[in-house]
Length: 138
Image 1 (cartoon, helix red, strand yellow):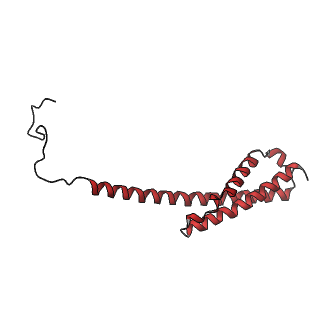
Image 2 (cartoon, one colour):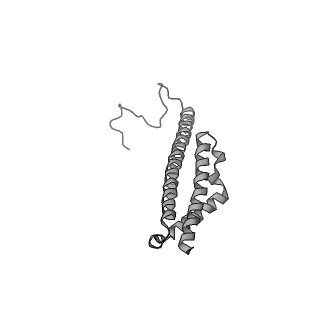
Image 3 (tube, rainbow, N blue to C red):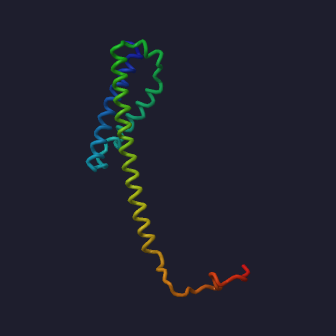
């Protein structure tokens, strides 16, 4: 077994573990339990960093020397990994936008409640304002 073949097998194994973790995250998000997300686990975060580093160092030309069946499996797992990541990203984006919308709505309501009451009566100003002041020097 060549080092390139070993590296591809390692990448496949890491990607499969990450796929499972991300699928668990998706299930947790859909169930409304974001605290149960596995990608928050330091072990999964280390695995993600290791996978990123190893995948970046994979030489595509040398990987072509791997057995055809291994390359097919690698392509399949990589495709699945990308699909799961895309779905995960969409869910997180939706959750973030919903959260930001809730925070903005609360902030707007607090601002509305704290705003001074505007009445139709005369306001107290240091100088006259309004349509009747034409010759006012500022």
